[in-house]
Image (cartoon, helix red, strand yellow):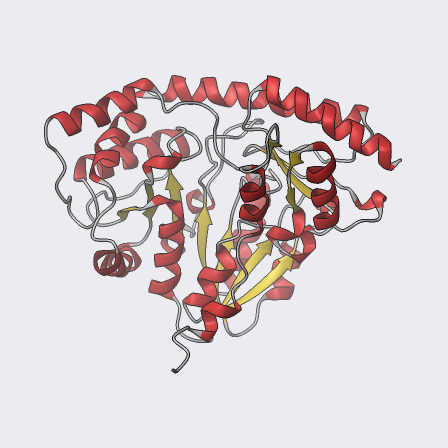
Length: 386
């Protein structure tokens, strides 16, 4: 029989995040700080609207782009929160999570051989999505000494005559890094000068701890060359609802909607009705969760300081990226031994790109009680190594 599988897919590496999660799920008394999922329940008003939509029998397909009422609510929300203005009828697409938005944006925009610049460490889906769209990923190794922010110099050095898209992901997973308005202005100047496009993954936009998030699309000259990816999973604790959105120029959104039409049809209907409430009525719920994450962030940073574990201060998302190079082990070895000896799971930094080697991703989207227990186990492990 001939080989039924695609060479391109066979060469793709499985997610480094899931490996440790799967082990933990079968290990009694283990604690996992590896999954980027809020520990909060979805706010009741959102759940209630989802239940109500089911009771009313609103279980049919929506339009391919999604409920117009929700697209309008998304536009109102983004204008109110981030000074972004879009046409809900032509410039917004509802997707199955932010990940689908990234995938269809790349497929709609890339021709074979087009290069996509991906600053790493980064979310695990970017590189394989570029490859599946027949693009060529070009990675930039972000540096700890720059607090894992992308610099103008680094971007300039990565651009060739084949470069078409820059993927921006701030606040960042896995590092928690953010880009200030001043940082983004320098990047925008390079993008405009080289006539590039941006896919800006802003799924953590509401989880910033030192001022409001700034979208690169809000800068002069950038709206027409940026696809903004947003969603409900992180800020609204709606991971299982599988709902995200893309906003951008109508020319690009139209082609993304075409792909979405054939592959998905529409995002989950129940989730869409519930998300209208999220956009319009849940600012206080988001603020409450953000405050709790910030408390956990500060607790973890102080704990790392006390145990002498170097870690720059993340200003967004809900991850820490401590440096474990002093112990002379790879990230994989460190994480494996920590799990085996202390039943504590974290994610090796190299799961997010080669430049993540020597670091760990630790999520603080867990209760303070769990974090305190986890810190105790990590401290014991480090003391034994020293």
